[in-house]
Image (cartoon, rainbow, N blue to C red; front, side, top):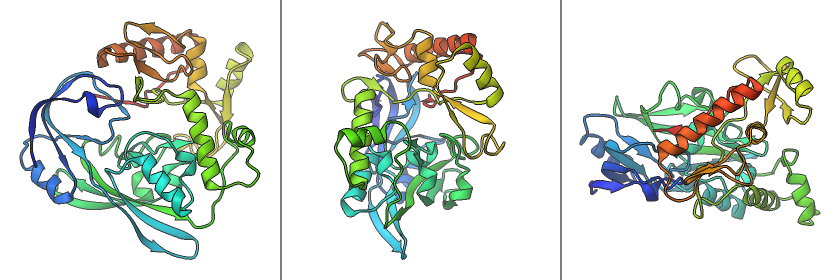
Length: 343
């Protein structure tokens, strides 16, 4: 294991922000991680695919890139397959691996950037499916106690783009692997967004997990910029949830406002009585879609995506996000929350 000094992190974050790490290394096993942790007196910064972070400054300490590999079928029963995946595996490559074997459950999560280890941290989701729907358990290394813990579904406390690792255990655990519970017989989710419309365009007559995956890929590719072509971290803000009374008030003033009835828990309040708003629509109505100042801006096709056109700093993109928050609050009385992690 080599520790490199003063390395640029530009290749390691999808925003393409050029900040440096004072020390940098990678690990592909638990033992390597444990050894590297003995070399630093403070908690290191753990880096995965770099697809959900905005770096606003240089990092003085040690940056460790999680590259733990592996995809293993560890158990199966009549209905499910239990697949353990190394945290360093690329998420979309894992989805493709499942599709080739007919393992169902993650097809709606196609083309989401990043690595497997970040998936439960964020409870990533798209087109009606979230990680919690296919999650079984994970193993995580406790930086403080230097031991491995197993987290079950309940232990992770999944919420909308939330988990226990983003709040209570932030910077304490390093996810080593995740075990998913996938179906032998698929249960198709086609009611969210434009999936059915895209399947019709594709001429699909018989549903399959490959067809749904391709529909999702087509939709995402048409709306979201490729980080390899223009720096971004996907959706920068969460879709806010408001009580139905608030939604009705907003709809009276803004008849075209986009909202979806909420099912399931909202902050422990239970199902019903809440509406999820489309953050992209709110931002667009405030005039930000296609906005550019220097090399920081909002994407021309999706206002929810902040972009780095070339040499924007993390601080410039953060400041733009702050202006967007203020404008949405002023116009709609709705407070947006960033989905991207700020460092």
